[in-house]
Image 1 (cartoon, helix red, strand yellow):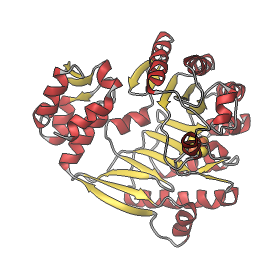
Image 2 (spheres, protein in one colour; image 1 turned 120 degrees about the vertical axis):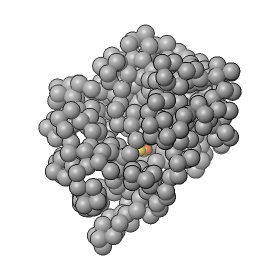
Image 3 (cartoon, protein in one colour; image 1 turned 90 degrees about the vertical axis):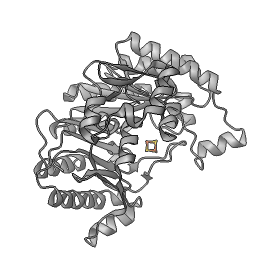
Length: 383
Ligand code: SF4
C-alpha cells in the first residue's frame, strides 16, 4: 500500500453527551500523556509496515481532540510528518468542541499544519444544548471559529443535529444560521440517532424527554437543505454540505472506499494489500490500548479479509451516498467488471423507481435516492 488517509482517534471528552455511544472517556486526564505515547508507538509500527506511505489527508477525531492539553496534538502531528509523506497540499483536520478550542490551542494546531477545523455546534439553543449534555453555547462556537480564523485556519466545518429534544424547525434553522454566520464552509447535518443504553435513550423511555416525530424531523431536514443551498453550501453527501472545493477530502476517501489507516483505541483501518483489502479493528478500551503499547503488542483485536464481492458492494453502497455517485469506469478498472452488470437487478429497479440515474459515466443517486439512501443500500444488499 503506497497511499492512505490517516485517522487518529482521541478518545477523551470533558463530559459525556447524553446521546453519545462513541468510544470516549471523561475524567481520564491522567491517561492522556500515556495514550499519546501509545499512539506514537502504533504510528511507528505502521511506518515499519508501510515505510513509503503517502498520506493525502489526516483526520484527528474523537472523542474531543481539543480536550487534550496544549502540546499533545502538535506532538502527534509532528511525528506523523516525520514518518509519512504528508505533502504541503494535504488536508489536515482536527475536531474540536467550542468550549475547549482556546486561542492558544488553535494557534498551536495551525503551526502544526492543521488547515481544517471541524467544530461541534449541534444546536444554537442553550436549552437544547443543556438537554443533550453539551458544555458550550452558541457564543462559545462563534468565539472558537474566530480564534481559528485568527490562527490562520480558514476552512471551518460545523456539525449540527436535528431531531433533538424539544427542537423546532426554527431552532434548527438558527443553528445553521449560526454556522453560516461564523464562516463555516462545511456543514454536517445529522439526524439524532437514539442509541440504546445512553442517558438520553433512558430519559425518552421514561417519558421525561420528548423528541420531534418523524414528520417534524423531515421538515427540519428539508428546511435545512433549502437554507444551506441558499447560502452556497451544496449537498455533496447524504448529510454533508460544502462550499465548492470545501468538501472534506478525508471523508470523501471513505465514501470512495479507498484505503485508510486508523490509529488509536477503537480505530479501524482498511489496508489495501494489492490482492483485496484487510479491515482491522483496534481494542476499544483506553487502558488496554495503553497497556498493549507498553508491552510492545499490537492493538489490533480483529482482522478480516474483504472479498471482491463484498468490496464491490461497499463501493456501490458508499458511493451512492455521494451526489456525484460512482464512477463506472473506475469501478471497472478496479474490479474488472461492469457495475451495471454485476448489480443489474438493483440498478434496474432503482432506476425505475427514480432513485438512481446514469449520467456521464457515473451512477448517481437522485434527490429521492439521497433522501432514502437506506432503501438504496438495501436493494444492493439483496442483489
Ligand atoms: S463530544 Fe462527541 S464523543 Fe464526546 S461525549 Fe459528546 S458526542 Fe461523545
